Every structure is written in C-alpha cells, then in structure tokens.
Image 1 (tube, rainbow, N blue to C red):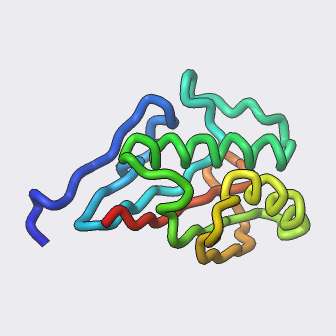
Image 2 (cartoon, rainbow, N blue to C red; image 1 turned 30 degrees about the vertical axis):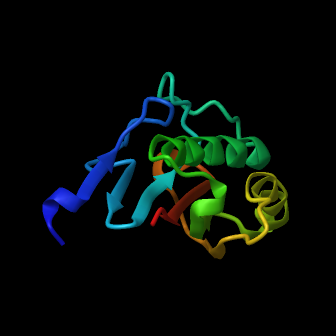
Length: 132
C-alpha cells in the first residue's frame, strides 16, 4: 500500500495517546482505531473512580470521538475487541455497549480477560470500521 493511502486520525475530543501510536489510522477503505481507555480527553486524567459502567461509557465516548473525526459512526464499525480485567463485569459492560452499538447489524466482537491494562483501568476497547 502506498504511504499516501495511509492517514493518521487525531482529535482533541479523545485522549492524547499514552505511547507512540495514533488514535486511528485510515488505510484504504478501513479505519483502525487504537484501544481507548477511560481518560478524560480535556485533561488526560482518569476520573471514573472504579465504576465499570462509568468507565465503559467514557471509553466508548473516546472511541466514538475517533470514529467521528474520521467521518464514521457506529454503523461503520465491523469489529470490536473488549479487554476486561474482570469478566464478572461482562453484563454491566454489555448494557452500556448496547447503548452505543444499537444499529441493525451490531459489529463482530471479541471480549477477553487480561491481567492488567494501562494506568490501572478496568476496560479498553478498540475497533475496526469500514469506510469504503
């Protein structure tokens, strides 16, 4: 793929990356969104106090900000991956997730339990979207 077909997506409506990566990459007809955690985009701080529902909502708000910056929305998302430090939170996460992905065809998804996540958060979500 020609480098001219690859574009970084960057928005101040999502947190600045905590490492050497882009918030999202447009490549061909695809958008690859990096995993988002529950950082407040305005100050880069965690403000969720261990509440998995509040944390999930912030993560999805951050992810949707990257989607919006690329001209996408929930209906463009074809695949998500959810990383949880405790699968006991699965039902609570699903409730919030379904508020954001309530389109006719929900994206394919994987959900895995991990031992830890950046900055001690409880959840991280990434996605791939088709923009054609």
